[in-house]
Image (cartoon, rainbow over all chains, first blue to last red; front, side, top):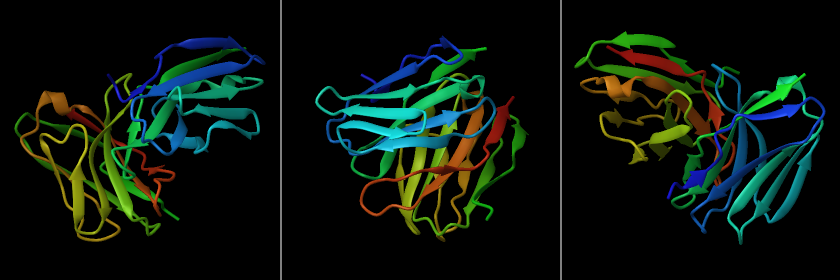
Length: 111
Length: 114
């Protein structure tokens, strides 16, 4: 079983819709969870992090964490074409020192 | 601030050659990482370091070596390059107190082994 799993997509949504991206992880001891956005040919950049069960909102982005189900999600409201990118879920694992990434979900926002 | 700087940005190697990818950060971060990213894939951890003089293996360390003699620098050495090492390499750093925090990435080094 992969440590961090994501659907590779592509996930296509129309402009203005809500995009929902999902991630599951295997290490129950994981403490911190991250969503990175990566545009084609660029390096990843952090957009959200969450440590506690529940929701965390930042502008159009909401991260959701359910540790019992080992599930993290990212909601993007009012999706824009500029949101088209690959979204990488990342989890700290193997103690507190390593960050493990999923394979990423490619999001396409259709104008 | 420069942040995380990687050199070179592009390199073509022949099978069996060796090279070093350089990474330096000016943020006084204690943690540094090397990841590789194959086309259409996520990031795989090669090596990481929690401070000068301390390094540890990640998921895919075979064929690579690292050293961390200073806080700022974390070079990645490829010995006897193989086509399987064709990838984009990202160096990242983080300031960590307890739980791992945000990773700051360099722009990447695209390596092709022919």
